[in-house]
Structure formats: structure tokens, C-alpha cells
Image 1 (cartoon, helix red, strand yellow):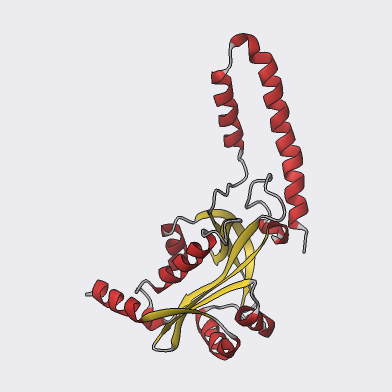
Image 2 (image 1 turned 60 degrees about the vertical axis):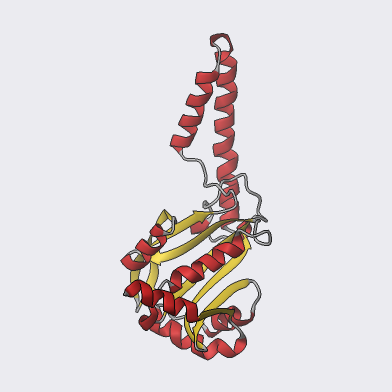
Length: 238
């Protein structure tokens, strides 16, 4: 029965981008859905600034869900997100930051959130959005519903963010989650470096081992030194 209802609702849902006259309705919905208070400038931006992907799901002309994402260059990442991409990506490579995803209570569990997220991902993986290499978001550590939703959609936890949020004057922990798209890759971990060296060693002949080991070790040192420097610089660009 629920699957039939979900299908019927989705058939009546239409998607459209937000526009300035949606501002008051979007402001009311976000106040109902989220514990964070956004400034008026934020609502002006998401309903009028083209750098935001702001998509609404409507049912009989009523907004019942929306997703807002900011598409920006890697150089604009905040410090806590600066290591989302591998260090060899240039500062102009794009990332997408999901700021908000919400659905009206009466329409939840009807696939509306998935429909909105799928629309964003379809855009980002099209020819127009191919330069985007990662989609990421922040979420309250206690929001188990959102955590399950994003994990089900193949987002992976990236960082634990202690005291990241301030909710009604109280500090709250959060997580960052990432989905890599269009061939995007995360930074290498220590395990990645060890695995890479192990694969190289298995391919080498004994007489060539010292020379290859020298180059491999020098490559690893360069990655650590110059890679970490690039990430630190990216995190401090405003």
C-alpha cells in the first residue's frame, strides 16, 4: 500500500528551481525543518543567486521539499573540509556542498528526498557539471535518519566535527559526508601508500630493487610534504 501511495505522490510531484517570490515560504519551511537559524541574506542568495542549485519539489503548486547546494571551486573550501579531495586536484576543480535537504512531514517516506538528490547528482554528472569531483555535506551527529539516508545513497563519512554546531546556544557534534563523482578521489591514507609500495615491490626484479625503492620513498615524501602544504593553503582561502 505504501509503495502504491509513494508512486502516486511522485507522479503528481513537479520539480522547479526556486525564485525570489519563494523566499517567505522557504524561510517558513526551513524554520520548521532545521534547528539552525539562517540569516536573511542566505534566503536571498538561495532564491536568486545562480551559484546555488536550489530545487523545489511541488505538489499541486505547494512546495513540499527542497534541496540547496552550492557549487564552488576547491579553493573556497573551509578549513575543516580542505582535505576532501586528493592534493593533486587544482584550486579551480569544483565541489558541491549540500546546504539543505528537507521534505514536509506529510510527504516523507514517499521518495521525495531521493528524487531531489537524484536531480542534483544527475546535473553534477552531466557534461555541464563534469568538473565537479565531490559532493559533501555536514550533518548533526544525532540525526540518525539523515545519516542512514546518506549512507544508503553511498555517501561515506569523512570527518567527525566536534562542537561544529551551536543549537539554541549549546554546542553539538557533527559529521561530514562525501560522495565522489566524475572520477574524483580522496587523499591517500597511510594504508594507501603502504599498499602502493607493496604493489611496486612485487613487480620489481631483485637487481633493480634499491633504485626503485629510492624513487618510491622520495615520491612518498614529496606527496606528504607538498600535498599537505597545498591542503593547508586551500583551507585558508576565504
